[in-house]
Image 1 (spheres, rainbow over the protein chains, first blue to last red):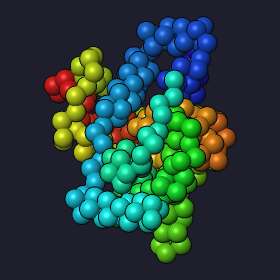
Image 2: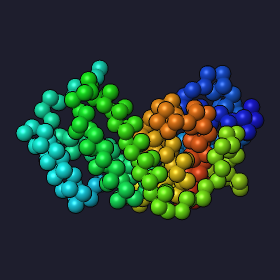
Image 3: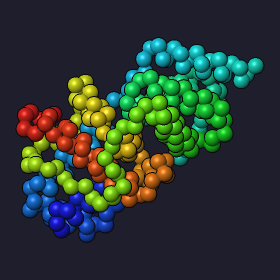
Image 4: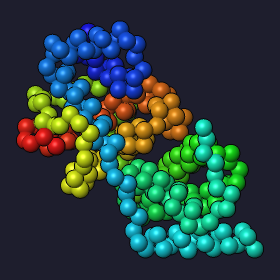
Length: 79
Length: 188
């Protein structure tokens, strides 16, 4: 496997969409290519920390507005 | 197993269960509070109108993602008619992106599950915000929301190879944006 081939397969690699033999070829390549090893590891870490992002917080004003809108909507629906 | 939707629908329940989910996607796709609030409000209206038509939480979750993405894209399109189009590089070239241009350094990161400090979260949010919109949409849906590529393709009306290509490019850009903070230094 070449560096370009690995780059083209990286999305499928992280999605788990590759067959075992191709994954093994990638693993073999990164044991001998430090640059690809670093890129794969750092992209993997980027994905992991992105998944740990906290939820965006809704402002107090917006929460009040939304609750008011929902109350009106649901009250109107039950009348 | 599909979790049921509560029979008694209250304003507080709709707010607590659905508003944060919608707002998160909209905020990260659109990049600002005001637009995300507009979209959240629009989508919650739809939720209230349609909630009793869903058979379970799983079906609702899929619908909620789709409606929120559609609302965010529509909002962005309306905004774009009022503003000058953002200049982005051509995206139709679906050949794999090259990696980083210069030399790369190993990241000094802990192998266990990361716990993000507020400063690191802000740094990642900022890097996401810097992505061109078509890359940002795919990245938010795939790597923040954890949706499968096939669902993203359907929501964004893209081919699967286009989703994969954009996602790959987005990840490389995110990697490059975060690299200065992780190369060398203390494990984080």
